[in-house]
Picture 1 (cartoon, rainbow, N blue to C red):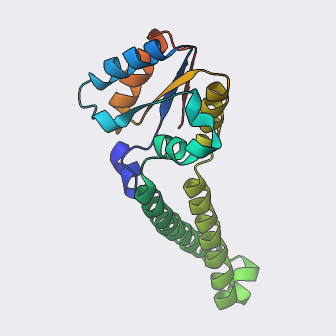
Picture 2: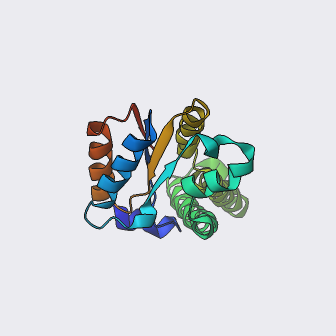
Length: 185
């Protein structure tokens, strides 16, 4: 499944796992434990502190939570191409089914029906690509982390590259005393 999703997304890390800690020492200890997981590169684990919630640290905050800026652009292109194409294929199949079933509206005006059915399905596919690009699942995690930092707490954010790393990181964070553990899809 990871391989199929990588085809639509331009980012190496499709999910994020974050935990909030009450003090810096606990957060730093967790970063060290996470970095020792098999296959975990140092850039995949990041820590944010209360100072990172300030406006003058907005760029650092953004890069910590969304480090793959080029990947996001690639995701935008790939998601629209894949979902638009999938919508067009669904439209073709739907049109063929409607034509074959003898639907009067389709049979009486096949060219206009073809344009309408395939066009609308492609459009809905492109809209789905926009939804995938927006990554609405990230908003909740980003909001949680920002609120914790504003309360003077510390956050550890992990960018796993596959399902196994995601499970390992989440288990370690849940067992490691993090007050809250949040994850994107």
